[in-house]
Length: 356
Ligand SMILES: *[C@@H]1O[C@H](CO)[C@@H](O)[C@H](O)[C@H]1NC(C)=O
Ligand SMILES: *[C@@H]1O[C@H](CO)[C@@H](O)[C@H](O)[C@H]1NC(C)=O
Ligand SMILES: *[C@@H]1O[C@H](CO)[C@@H](O)[C@H](O)[C@H]1NC(C)=O
Image (cartoon, rainbow, N blue to C red; front, side, top):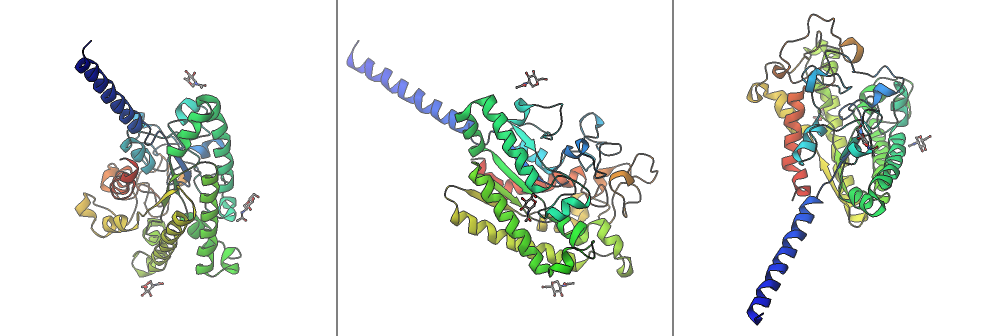
Protein backbone atom coordinates (compact mmCIF):
# COMPACT_ATOMS: atom_id res chain seq x y z
CA UNK A 1 0.00 0.00 0.00
CA UNK A 2 1.30 3.42 -0.93
CA UNK A 3 1.54 6.17 1.54
CA UNK A 4 -1.22 8.24 -0.16
CA UNK A 5 -3.64 5.29 -0.02
CA UNK A 6 -3.12 4.84 3.67
CA UNK A 7 -3.65 8.54 4.02
CA UNK A 8 -6.99 8.36 2.12
CA UNK A 9 -8.26 5.48 4.19
CA UNK A 10 -7.38 7.39 7.30
CA UNK A 11 -9.32 10.46 6.06
CA UNK A 12 -12.29 8.26 5.19
CA UNK A 13 -12.35 6.61 8.58
CA UNK A 14 -11.95 9.98 10.21
CA UNK A 15 -14.89 11.48 8.26
CA UNK A 16 -17.03 8.44 8.99
CA UNK A 17 -16.21 8.79 12.65
CA UNK A 18 -17.22 12.48 12.70
CA UNK A 19 -20.47 11.70 10.86
CA UNK A 20 -21.40 8.94 13.27
CA UNK A 21 -20.70 11.26 16.19
CA UNK A 22 -22.99 13.88 14.67
CA UNK A 23 -25.74 11.36 14.06
CA UNK A 24 -25.53 10.06 17.62
CA UNK A 25 -25.62 13.61 18.89
CA UNK A 26 -28.77 14.65 16.97
CA UNK A 27 -30.39 11.40 18.06
CA UNK A 28 -29.80 12.18 21.68
CA UNK A 29 -31.19 15.73 21.62
CA UNK A 30 -34.60 15.21 23.19
CA UNK A 31 -35.27 11.49 23.63
CA UNK A 32 -38.42 11.99 25.73
CA UNK A 33 -41.00 14.53 26.89
CA UNK A 34 -41.91 14.24 30.59
CA UNK A 35 -44.91 16.19 31.81
CA UNK A 36 -46.18 17.46 35.17
CA UNK A 37 -49.32 19.51 35.69
CA UNK A 38 -53.11 19.81 35.60
CA UNK A 39 -55.91 19.27 33.07
CA UNK A 40 -54.08 21.33 30.47
CA UNK A 41 -51.68 18.37 30.10
CA UNK A 42 -53.45 15.36 31.70
CA UNK A 43 -53.93 12.52 29.19
CA UNK A 44 -56.15 10.43 31.48
CA UNK A 45 -54.45 9.83 34.83
CA UNK A 46 -57.66 10.83 36.59
CA UNK A 47 -59.47 7.84 35.02
CA UNK A 48 -57.55 5.67 37.46
CA UNK A 49 -58.19 7.55 40.72
CA UNK A 50 -61.48 8.21 42.54
CA UNK A 51 -62.39 11.76 41.53
CA UNK A 52 -65.20 13.50 39.67
CA UNK A 53 -62.62 15.51 37.65
CA UNK A 54 -62.98 13.23 34.62
CA UNK A 55 -63.48 13.48 30.89
CA UNK A 56 -63.25 9.87 29.64
CA UNK A 57 -66.65 9.92 27.96
CA UNK A 58 -68.15 11.45 24.83
CA UNK A 59 -68.17 14.08 23.47
CA UNK A 60 -64.64 14.51 24.91
CA UNK A 61 -62.17 13.04 22.42
CA UNK A 62 -64.67 13.39 19.58
CA UNK A 63 -61.87 14.50 17.20
CA UNK A 64 -59.11 12.38 18.78
CA UNK A 65 -57.69 9.33 16.94
CA UNK A 66 -60.56 6.85 16.71
CA UNK A 67 -62.87 9.34 18.42
CA UNK A 68 -61.59 8.01 21.73
CA UNK A 69 -62.35 9.82 25.00
CA UNK A 70 -59.01 9.27 26.74
CA UNK A 71 -59.45 11.63 29.66
CA UNK A 72 -57.91 14.59 27.84
CA UNK A 73 -60.05 17.67 28.54
CA UNK A 74 -60.57 18.56 24.89
CA UNK A 75 -62.18 17.34 21.70
CA UNK A 76 -58.78 16.12 20.52
CA UNK A 77 -55.13 16.41 21.41
CA UNK A 78 -53.61 18.63 24.09
CA UNK A 79 -50.57 20.94 23.73
CA UNK A 80 -47.98 18.45 24.99
CA UNK A 81 -49.09 15.91 22.35
CA UNK A 82 -48.31 18.45 19.62
CA UNK A 83 -45.02 19.38 21.28
CA UNK A 84 -43.96 15.71 21.41
CA UNK A 85 -44.74 15.41 17.71
CA UNK A 86 -42.82 18.60 16.90
CA UNK A 87 -39.78 17.02 18.56
CA UNK A 88 -40.05 14.04 16.22
CA UNK A 89 -41.41 11.81 18.97
CA UNK A 90 -44.86 10.20 19.23
CA UNK A 91 -48.02 12.20 18.30
CA UNK A 92 -49.50 11.59 21.77
CA UNK A 93 -48.07 11.35 25.28
CA UNK A 94 -49.66 8.59 27.42
CA UNK A 95 -50.83 8.90 31.02
CA UNK A 96 -48.53 7.24 33.56
CA UNK A 97 -51.39 5.46 35.36
CA UNK A 98 -52.87 3.98 32.17
CA UNK A 99 -52.28 0.19 32.29
CA UNK A 100 -52.42 0.00 28.48
CA UNK A 101 -48.93 1.51 28.36
CA UNK A 102 -45.65 0.43 29.89
CA UNK A 103 -42.09 1.65 30.26
CA UNK A 104 -41.27 1.06 26.60
CA UNK A 105 -43.85 3.80 25.81
CA UNK A 106 -43.05 5.99 28.82
CA UNK A 107 -39.35 6.00 27.91
CA UNK A 108 -40.31 8.31 25.00
CA UNK A 109 -43.05 10.35 26.65
CA UNK A 110 -45.10 10.29 29.84
CA UNK A 111 -47.46 12.57 31.71
CA UNK A 112 -47.99 12.54 35.47
CA UNK A 113 -50.51 15.38 35.25
CA UNK A 114 -53.85 15.33 37.00
CA UNK A 115 -56.86 17.48 36.12
CA UNK A 116 -57.86 19.74 38.99
CA UNK A 117 -54.45 19.84 40.66
CA UNK A 118 -52.27 22.84 41.50
CA UNK A 119 -49.02 23.86 43.14
CA UNK A 120 -50.85 24.07 46.48
CA UNK A 121 -51.79 20.83 48.30
CA UNK A 122 -55.07 22.48 49.27
CA UNK A 123 -55.98 22.75 45.56
CA UNK A 124 -55.61 19.03 44.80
CA UNK A 125 -57.69 18.31 47.93
CA UNK A 126 -60.74 20.10 46.47
CA UNK A 127 -61.49 17.36 43.93
CA UNK A 128 -59.30 14.60 45.49
CA UNK A 129 -56.85 14.56 42.61
CA UNK A 130 -53.11 13.89 42.44
CA UNK A 131 -51.14 16.53 44.35
CA UNK A 132 -47.92 17.84 42.81
CA UNK A 133 -45.79 16.13 45.48
CA UNK A 134 -47.36 12.82 44.42
CA UNK A 135 -46.56 13.52 40.75
CA UNK A 136 -42.96 13.79 41.94
CA UNK A 137 -43.23 10.43 43.74
CA UNK A 138 -44.49 8.88 40.50
CA UNK A 139 -41.54 10.47 38.67
CA UNK A 140 -39.11 8.79 41.08
CA UNK A 141 -40.84 5.44 40.53
CA UNK A 142 -40.65 6.10 36.77
CA UNK A 143 -36.90 6.68 36.99
CA UNK A 144 -36.48 3.28 38.68
CA UNK A 145 -38.47 1.59 35.92
CA UNK A 146 -36.47 3.47 33.30
CA UNK A 147 -33.21 2.27 34.85
CA UNK A 148 -34.42 -1.33 34.84
CA UNK A 149 -35.46 -0.92 31.18
CA UNK A 150 -32.55 1.09 29.72
CA UNK A 151 -29.76 0.39 32.19
CA UNK A 152 -28.39 2.92 34.66
CA UNK A 153 -26.21 5.00 32.33
CA UNK A 154 -28.62 5.20 29.43
CA UNK A 155 -31.51 6.07 31.78
CA UNK A 156 -29.41 8.87 33.30
CA UNK A 157 -28.74 10.22 29.84
CA UNK A 158 -32.42 10.00 28.88
CA UNK A 159 -33.40 12.00 31.98
CA UNK A 160 -30.76 14.68 31.45
CA UNK A 161 -31.64 15.11 27.76
CA UNK A 162 -35.44 14.79 28.14
CA UNK A 163 -37.65 17.85 27.98
CA UNK A 164 -39.49 18.22 31.30
CA UNK A 165 -42.63 20.33 31.09
CA UNK A 166 -44.69 21.88 33.90
CA UNK A 167 -48.16 23.30 33.25
CA UNK A 168 -50.32 24.23 36.23
CA UNK A 169 -51.43 27.08 38.50
CA UNK A 170 -54.83 28.09 37.10
CA UNK A 171 -56.68 25.87 39.59
CA UNK A 172 -54.83 27.37 42.55
CA UNK A 173 -56.53 30.66 41.77
CA UNK A 174 -59.87 29.68 40.24
CA UNK A 175 -60.74 26.42 42.02
CA UNK A 176 -59.13 27.33 45.32
CA UNK A 177 -58.26 30.95 46.20
CA UNK A 178 -61.25 32.69 44.60
CA UNK A 179 -63.74 29.87 45.33
CA UNK A 180 -63.18 28.64 48.89
CA UNK A 181 -64.20 31.43 51.28
CA UNK A 182 -62.44 30.16 54.42
CA UNK A 183 -59.34 28.85 52.70
CA UNK A 184 -56.25 30.53 51.33
CA UNK A 185 -58.00 33.88 50.74
CA UNK A 186 -58.51 34.26 54.51
CA UNK A 187 -54.79 33.52 55.07
CA UNK A 188 -53.03 35.34 52.24
CA UNK A 189 -53.46 38.45 50.10
CA UNK A 190 -53.37 37.56 46.42
CA UNK A 191 -49.74 38.72 46.14
CA UNK A 192 -48.76 36.64 49.18
CA UNK A 193 -50.51 33.64 47.70
CA UNK A 194 -48.66 34.11 44.38
CA UNK A 195 -45.38 34.16 46.30
CA UNK A 196 -46.39 31.03 48.22
CA UNK A 197 -47.01 29.21 44.91
CA UNK A 198 -43.76 30.51 43.42
CA UNK A 199 -41.94 29.02 46.42
CA UNK A 200 -43.50 25.63 45.69
CA UNK A 201 -42.68 25.90 41.97
CA UNK A 202 -39.04 26.72 42.78
CA UNK A 203 -38.75 23.77 45.18
CA UNK A 204 -40.28 21.43 42.64
CA UNK A 205 -37.78 22.49 39.97
CA UNK A 206 -34.89 22.04 42.42
CA UNK A 207 -36.13 18.55 43.22
CA UNK A 208 -36.39 17.36 39.62
CA UNK A 209 -32.99 19.00 38.99
CA UNK A 210 -31.51 16.98 41.85
CA UNK A 211 -33.01 13.88 40.22
CA UNK A 212 -31.16 14.65 36.98
CA UNK A 213 -33.54 16.83 34.96
CA UNK A 214 -31.74 19.59 33.02
CA UNK A 215 -34.06 20.74 30.23
CA UNK A 216 -37.17 22.19 31.83
CA UNK A 217 -40.06 24.30 30.52
CA UNK A 218 -42.06 26.17 33.13
CA UNK A 219 -45.51 26.97 31.74
CA UNK A 220 -47.26 30.29 32.41
CA UNK A 221 -50.94 30.99 33.00
CA UNK A 222 -53.46 31.75 30.24
CA UNK A 223 -55.67 34.86 30.55
CA UNK A 224 -57.75 33.28 33.35
CA UNK A 225 -60.39 35.99 33.27
CA UNK A 226 -61.33 35.04 29.70
CA UNK A 227 -62.21 31.40 30.36
CA UNK A 228 -65.94 31.05 29.50
CA UNK A 229 -66.76 29.91 33.05
CA UNK A 230 -65.33 33.12 34.48
CA UNK A 231 -66.99 35.28 31.83
CA UNK A 232 -70.32 33.68 32.72
CA UNK A 233 -69.94 34.83 36.33
CA UNK A 234 -69.45 38.33 34.92
CA UNK A 235 -72.89 38.53 33.27
CA UNK A 236 -73.59 41.80 35.09
CA UNK A 237 -70.91 43.39 32.90
CA UNK A 238 -71.96 41.80 29.62
CA UNK A 239 -69.87 38.63 30.16
CA UNK A 240 -66.61 40.40 29.36
CA UNK A 241 -63.27 38.95 30.44
CA UNK A 242 -62.60 39.56 34.14
CA UNK A 243 -59.71 42.06 34.30
CA UNK A 244 -58.87 41.17 37.88
CA UNK A 245 -58.14 37.54 36.99
CA UNK A 246 -56.19 38.51 33.88
CA UNK A 247 -54.10 40.81 36.04
CA UNK A 248 -53.32 37.91 38.36
CA UNK A 249 -52.21 35.84 35.35
CA UNK A 250 -49.90 38.64 34.21
CA UNK A 251 -48.51 39.22 37.68
CA UNK A 252 -47.97 35.52 38.37
CA UNK A 253 -46.36 34.99 34.94
CA UNK A 254 -43.97 37.83 35.69
CA UNK A 255 -42.96 36.08 38.91
CA UNK A 256 -42.51 32.75 37.09
CA UNK A 257 -40.30 34.50 34.55
CA UNK A 258 -38.14 35.98 37.35
CA UNK A 259 -37.96 32.54 38.96
CA UNK A 260 -36.51 31.07 35.75
CA UNK A 261 -33.83 33.77 35.64
CA UNK A 262 -32.94 33.12 39.27
CA UNK A 263 -32.75 29.33 38.98
CA UNK A 264 -30.72 29.48 35.74
CA UNK A 265 -28.14 31.43 37.73
CA UNK A 266 -28.24 29.15 40.76
CA UNK A 267 -28.29 25.64 39.27
CA UNK A 268 -25.25 24.72 37.10
CA UNK A 269 -26.09 23.05 33.79
CA UNK A 270 -29.83 23.70 34.02
CA UNK A 271 -31.64 25.01 30.95
CA UNK A 272 -34.91 26.34 32.35
CA UNK A 273 -37.23 28.24 30.02
CA UNK A 274 -40.49 30.07 30.58
CA UNK A 275 -43.24 29.07 28.13
CA UNK A 276 -45.79 31.86 28.21
CA UNK A 277 -49.15 31.21 26.52
CA UNK A 278 -50.74 34.48 27.70
CA UNK A 279 -50.16 36.83 24.76
CA UNK A 280 -50.83 34.39 21.94
CA UNK A 281 -53.98 33.29 23.75
CA UNK A 282 -55.03 36.91 24.21
CA UNK A 283 -54.46 37.61 20.53
CA UNK A 284 -56.75 34.70 19.62
CA UNK A 285 -59.41 36.00 22.03
CA UNK A 286 -59.23 39.58 20.77
CA UNK A 287 -59.16 38.71 17.06
CA UNK A 288 -60.71 35.24 16.76
CA UNK A 289 -61.59 35.66 13.08
CA UNK A 290 -57.92 36.25 12.20
CA UNK A 291 -57.31 32.72 13.42
CA UNK A 292 -60.36 31.21 11.70
CA UNK A 293 -62.66 31.10 14.71
CA UNK A 294 -66.29 32.19 14.92
CA UNK A 295 -66.81 32.00 18.70
CA UNK A 296 -64.45 33.01 21.50
CA UNK A 297 -66.64 33.91 24.48
CA UNK A 298 -68.57 30.68 25.04
CA UNK A 299 -67.48 27.06 24.61
CA UNK A 300 -68.55 24.37 22.14
CA UNK A 301 -69.78 21.79 24.64
CA UNK A 302 -73.37 22.09 25.88
CA UNK A 303 -74.47 25.70 26.45
CA UNK A 304 -70.80 26.67 26.58
CA UNK A 305 -71.45 28.84 29.62
CA UNK A 306 -70.46 26.65 32.56
CA UNK A 307 -70.26 22.96 31.62
CA UNK A 308 -67.15 20.83 31.99
CA UNK A 309 -66.48 17.24 33.14
CA UNK A 310 -69.70 15.28 33.71
CA UNK A 311 -71.83 18.30 32.82
CA UNK A 312 -70.33 18.17 29.31
CA UNK A 313 -71.78 14.88 28.07
CA UNK A 314 -73.17 13.33 24.90
CA UNK A 315 -76.79 13.93 25.93
CA UNK A 316 -76.52 17.65 25.52
CA UNK A 317 -78.22 18.78 22.33
CA UNK A 318 -76.61 22.24 22.37
CA UNK A 319 -73.06 21.00 21.74
CA UNK A 320 -71.64 22.56 18.57
CA UNK A 321 -70.98 20.45 15.50
CA UNK A 322 -67.63 21.96 14.44
CA UNK A 323 -65.30 22.52 17.37
CA UNK A 324 -62.72 24.18 15.08
CA UNK A 325 -64.96 27.27 15.00
CA UNK A 326 -64.60 27.64 18.76
CA UNK A 327 -61.64 28.78 20.85
CA UNK A 328 -62.91 26.76 23.82
CA UNK A 329 -64.12 23.18 23.95
CA UNK A 330 -65.70 23.27 27.43
CA UNK A 331 -66.10 26.20 29.79
CA UNK A 332 -62.52 25.80 31.07
CA UNK A 333 -60.49 24.12 28.31
CA UNK A 334 -59.43 25.04 24.76
CA UNK A 335 -60.36 23.10 21.63
CA UNK A 336 -57.75 20.95 19.91
CA UNK A 337 -57.26 23.72 17.36
CA UNK A 338 -56.37 26.24 20.07
CA UNK A 339 -54.08 23.69 21.75
CA UNK A 340 -52.32 23.21 18.42
CA UNK A 341 -51.81 26.96 17.81
CA UNK A 342 -50.44 27.49 21.31
CA UNK A 343 -48.16 24.45 21.12
CA UNK A 344 -46.76 25.61 17.76
CA UNK A 345 -46.16 29.07 19.17
CA UNK A 346 -44.32 27.78 22.23
CA UNK A 347 -42.22 25.37 20.14
CA UNK A 348 -41.25 28.11 17.69
CA UNK A 349 -40.56 30.88 20.19
CA UNK A 350 -39.26 29.05 23.24
CA UNK A 351 -38.56 25.35 22.83
CA UNK A 352 -36.61 25.49 19.53
CA UNK A 353 -33.41 25.88 21.53
CA UNK A 354 -33.88 22.27 22.65
CA UNK A 355 -34.33 21.13 19.05
CA UNK A 356 -30.97 22.27 17.66
C1 LIG B 1 -44.75 -3.34 26.79
O1 LIG B 1 -45.93 -3.75 26.12
C2 LIG B 1 -45.68 -4.28 24.83
C3 LIG B 1 -47.02 -4.49 24.14
O2 LIG B 1 -48.01 -4.84 25.04
C4 LIG B 1 -44.88 -5.57 24.97
O3 LIG B 1 -44.61 -6.12 23.71
C5 LIG B 1 -43.57 -5.24 25.67
O4 LIG B 1 -42.83 -6.40 25.91
C6 LIG B 1 -43.81 -4.51 26.99
N1 LIG B 1 -42.51 -4.03 27.46
C7 LIG B 1 -42.09 -4.10 28.72
C8 LIG B 1 -40.73 -3.59 29.00
O5 LIG B 1 -42.78 -4.59 29.60
C1 LIG C 1 -47.77 19.07 50.66
O1 LIG C 1 -47.99 17.79 51.22
C2 LIG C 1 -46.83 16.95 51.26
C3 LIG C 1 -47.23 15.57 51.75
O2 LIG C 1 -47.94 15.64 52.93
C4 LIG C 1 -45.78 17.59 52.16
O3 LIG C 1 -44.60 16.81 52.15
C5 LIG C 1 -45.45 19.00 51.63
O4 LIG C 1 -44.57 19.64 52.49
C6 LIG C 1 -46.74 19.82 51.48
N1 LIG C 1 -46.38 21.07 50.81
C7 LIG C 1 -46.55 22.27 51.36
C8 LIG C 1 -46.10 23.44 50.60
O5 LIG C 1 -47.10 22.43 52.45
C1 LIG D 1 -55.49 45.54 36.22
O1 LIG D 1 -54.24 46.13 35.96
C2 LIG D 1 -54.33 47.41 35.33
C3 LIG D 1 -52.94 47.83 34.90
O2 LIG D 1 -51.99 47.54 35.89
C4 LIG D 1 -55.01 48.37 36.29
O3 LIG D 1 -55.14 49.63 35.68
C5 LIG D 1 -56.39 47.84 36.66
O4 LIG D 1 -56.99 48.64 37.64
C6 LIG D 1 -56.30 46.41 37.17
N1 LIG D 1 -57.66 45.90 37.30
C7 LIG D 1 -58.08 45.12 38.28
C8 LIG D 1 -59.53 44.73 38.28
O5 LIG D 1 -57.33 44.69 39.15
